[in-house]
Image (cartoon, rainbow, N blue to C red; front, side):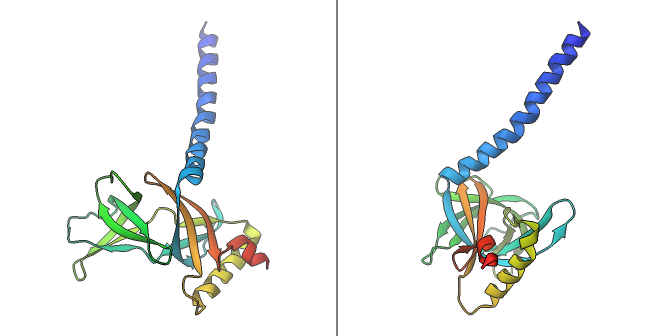
Length: 184
């Protein structure tokens, strides 16, 4: 009888170990399929981590928003409502500690508040783009060179947003996916 309980517990645990990652994958695929695409201008850094592998750390030029509210805590989760600007790039419209009832928004973490210019500085959660190891260094160099280029808006990350969930789809240089760009 005891071995039957152990076997049933084993089956339940095995199903959970499969169900949880599967649900996470379906959630991300749902955002990619049904979410709204936004382009975020990027700035590159390329670290290497023995556990994560090669990836590009992305920082964004939309990392602050003007607000008169001064009651912010470092690392506090906030909701940033976004819209596309006239050039088709994402821009923050408002910030709140309460989840917005309408419009597209992303969650972010408060970095700090500046009393000088009444701006809240925040970090977006989609700041790592993983690549095949053999292409990561070339991608870093290409991205850095494109940032130095005189053409504005030539490097960006395509992020799909739906109900506060954001999924980084790809990084582009001159409207070409970065993995294809480094192969040219």
